[in-house]
Length: 230
Image (cartoon, rainbow, N blue to C red; front, side):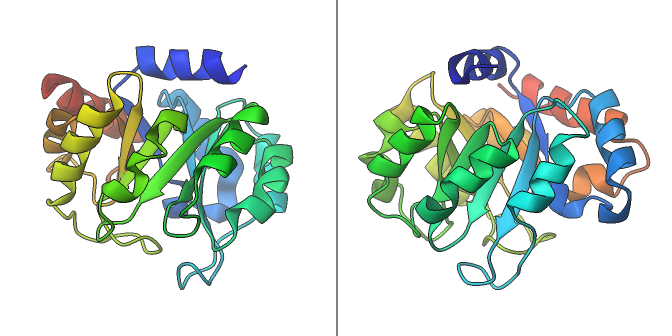
């Protein structure tokens, strides 16, 4: 699927729930992916950590490439790494259809966003809780996606930072209706409605899916709460 077709599909299907694979059972990926497909996942959020930009380390292109053979669901790679430009080609080759990197790691974001687009992938920027939105404002015209972090990147299970909602509101004003705005961190049944009302249309969710006994029911409930709040 082309970048434009993928983005059009995602925009038409918002609100989008993006399961964060950081919380999955890595020892049983085939089953996890199958359950998420049955639950109606339209994308899978891959948290890539290098142990430098954030303290933790997760997985890289070889592991992602092995998962690519399990499903046709698009992969949305969130690169929490120091030098995202040096790794771009490897993630494209591994089968990622969307790639997001942090403005804190690459302040001159425009050239890398254009490289991602030229590779046929959706190009995204992420912004940490303590980074002002002004840091990404100049690059927004080249962004397909903006990921607003509502927790500090690098660790799962953190509490939602409500001040992130102001950033979502402002991003929607600046980016207009075509910018896909995601929010990542602490998204649950208690927080998703407020995030949706602020203007988010993609919700990265970990514990609120994977710590339930029914992924489909959890995703349907979250999607319904987000839709009702728009």
